[in-house]
Image (cartoon, rainbow, N blue to C red; front, side, top):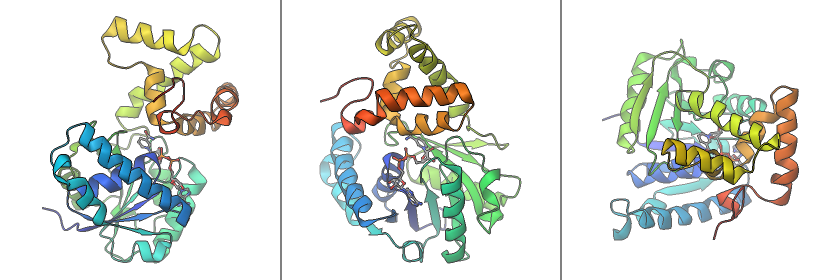
Amino acid sequence: MTDITNVTVLGTGVLGSQIAFQTAYSGFQVTAYDISDEALAKAKERFEGLIDAYRADGVEGASEGKGEQALERIRYSADLADAVKDADLVIEAVPEVLAIKQQTYEKLAAVAPEKTIFASNSSTLALSDLKDFTGRPAKFIGLHFANQVWKFNTGEVMATTDTDPAVFDALLAFAAEIGMVPIPIRKEKPGWLLNSLLVPFLDAAQELAFGGYAEPADIDNVWRIATGAPKGPFQILDIIGLTTPYNISVNGDEHHQQIAAWLKENYIDKGKLGIATGEGFYTYE
Ligand code: NAD
């Protein structure tokens, strides 16, 4: 058992909404924070969609109303000080943009109670580039989820050289309490374990399509058939949502910026952001 009862999630987009809902589903009191009331209204819709997804995927208790009960444990706030006033743990899932994250931690440091642990879900940014903005490096840690947390339930827990070992242990225990398989990472590794493998793989796939070598569906086909993997890289990109790979490439070298421009022109500007918008590389019902 950890001492964690109240959890605040910053950012209620693709991953933040899943983390907030899964945490509430596991019995915790959750506050969902986002930058505006409009974003929070969208979050509520996402949570309602997750109730259906949990039921459709046969998650334990989902058919007996556990999703609706989870929703009652979630409160909403667009005021940061109010959102974190009782938080034992803040999980940050704001956009994958260094300046946004650094500003978020600076503001958070000024208003969060002393007891509050800060955990970042950043996929590709280094925790070391964030820790000095937290005002509490000993209570700052990484907790990384995979998309569709109720099915793909890894909880990678990563300390920096400043993290208190007791906080590391508490987060491993918390990850298990919300139904994740805790995966300790012993040294700070940008990209964690999963993305150290996945990002170069998705990058290679985008290179092939951007370079005009083959269509996304054919690249997916060869990967699935020849390796037995259930999904190809473009199916995975549609699940992730195209904004995150765009943000990664746009901050890269000149070649990656060309790939970002290709993603923007052909997909993002046309509203094709992946499964969440009904269309990405594929079209969905
Ligand atoms: P997203 O764009 O879907 O959602 C971001 C949310 O943050 C939005 O609701 C937005 O309104 C909100 N936001 C914007 N500025 C903010 C601010 N200053 N303060 C608080 N909220 C703010 O992004 P996402 O895909 O959910 O990714 C969020 C984080 O999770 C990123 O660090 C990403 O690397 C990480 N992550 C994403 C995935 C994935 O598959 N999408 C998987 C693991 C980790």
